[in-house]
Length: 119
Image (cartoon, rainbow, N blue to C red; front, side, top):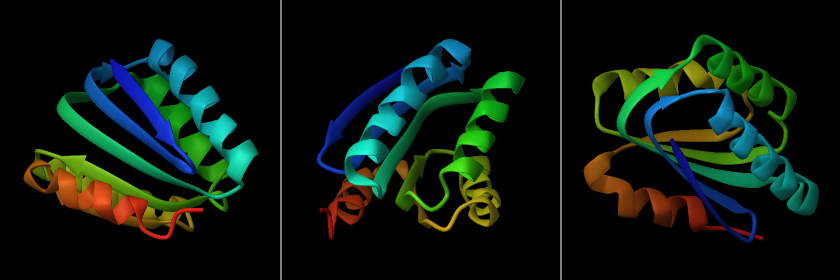
């Protein structure tokens, strides 16, 4: 499941469980709408009790990142497990964005970081 909020050029998402195509049918239009309006966006992505993606949803995520790498300015990944941090490092070659990992206890710091220098 994915919860989505937005403010100016920032999009906030909280993912729980396992993300699937239905979640991406909700996520991708929200991201595209922000990109169309602001050109460059900041993306806050928090994982709570996160179990990963279906194969097709992961593919859609990678393809979105590749196609929109110049539109992502900052990406804050907030997680609770070591593999979440490793996933953040694995994303870096696919985007020009400044990507940072934050432990769940530092979610407030992540929100502050992602909101600095907004349009």
